[in-house]
Length: 277
Ligand SMILES: *[C@@H]1O[C@H](CO)[C@@H](O)[C@H](O)[C@H]1NC(C)=O
Image 1 (cartoon, rainbow, N blue to C red):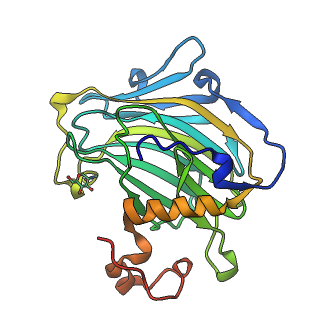
Image 2: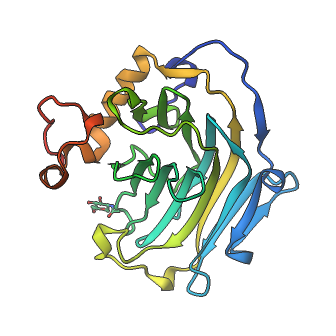
């Protein structure tokens, strides 16, 4: 499945509407480096490539979009740290500001050479998170660039990898689940050192002799295409495929969590699926 190519048109049921490209693919215009100084670099005359790096002196770097958005589709191509990346976290996410903030997260947790990355996802609405789903990928994310996307519209949040939907968080305000739909969000990305928890619960530490660690970003496109409503039949099929084979954690099926806090209302009331971990 490494070479699977899917057009986004097949996956999302698109309600016809104008797609307004807000901006595309020039990091000089589209983002601001917020921390890390020289460890964040925009390269190429058109500013089409951005690298974040980390060594013992910097412990990371990050940037954010110059604009903020209320709904849209956000695409980034990323190539992750090759080799031993244990302890590192590379991120691409949306977030609003303030105390009861909204956030949609993709965090790539590094691993030892040859061991798989974990893609950790979460959704915060009105300050409340705790909705983690984690995946392994069906390819090596350090070899080539792959496309990671967040679709955020009034009905659904859809996270896609190479146009394959891996997670959907639907608006269930009607049963009292808060949904991010009134605070504008910016796009953020960062590389940082989290060896106290990132890899196997902090048991595998960052090997600084392998530094600098570098992650690559390109083809950042944000568009206010919130007309995209949900998944097509093909999209739902692909989602099921990914969730069966590559999802390694789903908060809805976390029994310990359920005993402590009860089953989150958005997880439904049916018999819980099999414990996955
Ligand atoms: C690292 O690899 C191990 C298997 O070797 C796997 O169980 C784990 O999920 C991987 N990811 C992280 C972040 O530890």
